[in-house]
Length: 142
Image (cartoon, rainbow, N blue to C red; front, side, top):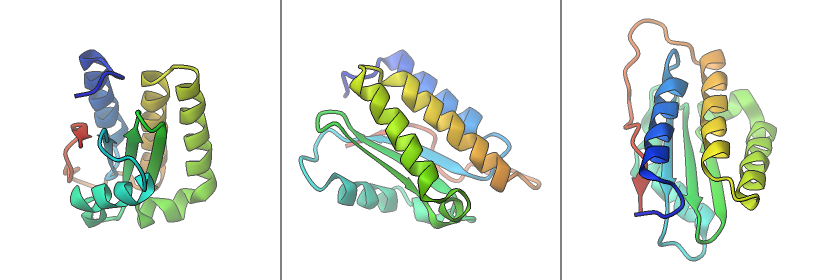
């Protein structure tokens, strides 16, 4: 499956996703890609669509698409959240995660990015009434 994160770390990332989505209508997914050898960004957008992430009610889904073998990270924020936080938010987050990766830290920067994304989602997309989980919180793989 993947040799970069332990089973416990993957479970902790799912917990971080659940925490980050609490009190927000936003959705966060992590996808670990072990197959793509080039065009990682294009593949990330295909995964975003395949996971139906553009179909959330408020267009506020965020995908962390990671290819450890290729050392490639793509973060996609759908149009609803992107309009609120703008590109510099994603650029800084991308830099923080990849800096961690370059130091051999995989789990910690990802967990922090998920929780930081949750803070922004809560700020701009607070729950009003029932909070339906529109997308799975599980990590997906290809």
